[in-house]
Amino acid sequence: MKAISNSAEATEEIGFKIGRKLKTGNIVRLYGDLGAGKTTMVKGIARALGIDRKDITSASFTIITEYPGNPPFFHIDLYRTSGGVDLDSTGIWDCIGAQSISVIEWADHAEGELPEDSLKVTISDLGNDVRDITIEGKNEKDWDHL
Ligand SMILES: Nc1ncnc2c1ncn2[C@@H]1O[C@H](COP(=O)(O)OP(=O)(O)OP(=O)(O)O)[C@@H](O)[C@H]1O
Ligand SMILES: [Mg+2]
Image (cartoon, rainbow, N blue to C red; front, side):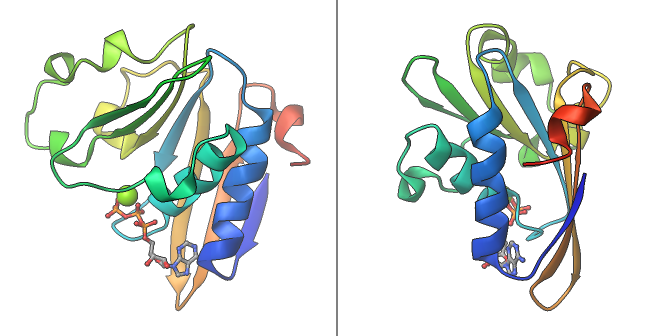
């Protein structure tokens, strides 16, 4: 599905609606340039999973943040894995998968290595506060209506 967001709050709300539909084992790939609104969306996803939105940050040297729970939630930011950082050395393979829910910012830095049946969310900055948001899942119908 596609949506237009006119504010950070609206993007967070779309994240919340995505988060409500996530199940254990789901992985969300987030695509979009610097400042597109990826972390903003993660705040909404996390809130739907019972995590305080204020706990979701974009610390510059943290690749993986774990929020313990049942299931655990992993916020992964691959921004600094460009330029030849070995993905295997980040430990992400011990985090994402059947036992957790994960969201991955800058998923393009792991292109071809992440499960293709994961949810793909692309955010494009159309200028000012406007963002174009595309949500693509394996079962397309599941995402027609958030
Ligand atoms: N419609 C919108 N959706 C999301 N963010 C918006 C929107 N309009 C304005 N913004 C602003 O754009 C910025 C988005 O920052 P955010 O950290 O979420 O982006 P990001 O994609 O995670 O960036 P980075 O690549 O650095 O991780 C925030 O300052 C937010 O307030
Ligand atoms: Mg970010």
